[in-house]
Length: 228
Image (tube, rainbow, N blue to C red; front, side):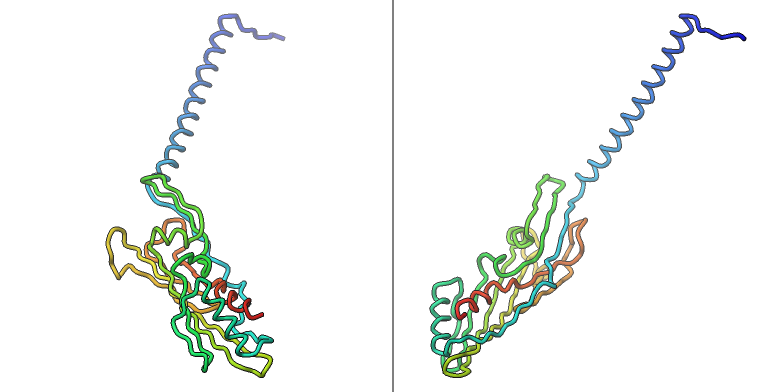
């Protein structure tokens, strides 16, 4: 039996060959990873990307009519006193008919409506946003909320009354930057306890093409809580 052995010189050449080829392999691997990461970074930096999550529209059990254990005069007075010291503005009232019209919403729109969650990254500045779609729309789309609430208070008997509330919500956005173009305006219209979903103009890449806004019923419940 013959056992082959390597001389010191042969071993040195073999070792050098292995080291050189390992370096080549590692260099190729490093270059591949670098080019791959650059490709990803390039993709991130050449387009705006974002995400949109609509609000839950199945979680409402809103009822727009309540019967209270207060007579008509007590109910009417309670509502008027509250309204006069609140975010509401009285547009019209007629005690004889029990009708009251209020407006609200010009400030703090997200108290009254919910339009979901939104985030984006802008490639040309690196600017990022994460938060409510309403906060984004307020500055980015010059969004405005206008709401009209109609309240109807009716006598049931000398010790109780019924109060009904119906609110019409209009939430408007402008998609033109630096100029006004009515063709690029979009509006959500819905009522108390309701919502609307629309297809938006130029949705940001990575997000669904629709946006949804719904009533939080905050304003309606504020009135109902007064007469309980």
